[in-house]
Image 1: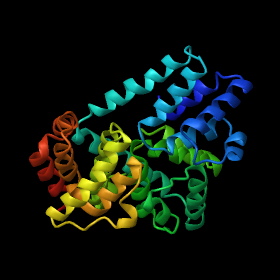
Image 2: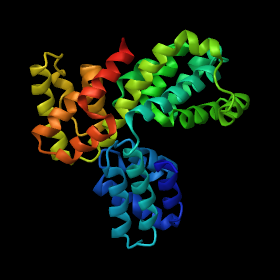
Image 3: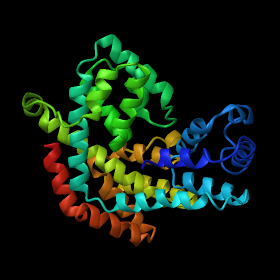
Image 4: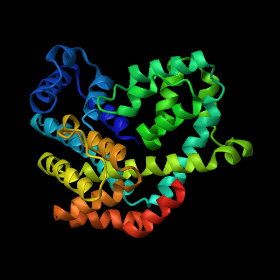
Length: 310
């Protein structure tokens, strides 16, 4: 199950009074940047989306902490499903992640090919309403796209393996049940012509999306203090490698997704190699080992990515 689904199911078990108490404690503990008025009017799905916008491991921890304060220990075990799913996800090799991303990209390209230019703009509008990503630079640019390929690539880069679920949400809002059914029945894969024409580009974008997903999972295991140190060391490592520097106005943020996007924009295909050096400097050898095992080490990883880009 997706993290969002588990959180919604958990909070749905609260009575209206308990849910109001949950929101009050959540505002004090973790969502102080949201106005109390807005949080007061939020339903279960709204609260979960706000939690997920934190884009860090604290999303589940904030929920667990508040439930414990409310003495709702009966609901806390439900969150362990998220923890076990995250551990399983961390064990997926990079090559397999790329294959999954390729399949997702091909499926979305074929499905959304039936949208007219007007419907594609409508798709962007509904997506921006449903998923307000605060730091995703690609997402903000996406609203100006009328090109199908750019739209799908940006969608996969932003949402990774959840791109199909996100697309289904949007198509439901657009009342395009025929395309929703096609996504559900994913056995009808893309045509051979589509694969032949776009295989290299699809594989390149899928590889970058898989790298981003892997980086997100890794940085979510860092504390806020460690994340700040990552940002400082990134500047130094980029300078050493003669890579573009992250603009100063973007170099300070407590959001792990924003840091990953900064790395991807600045370091591109070298992002994994760069973050491993940064984590070594921080003595987080546990995360370095995890990345090495998942990506078959920096050397093999770089060769695979370079082959994809070329």
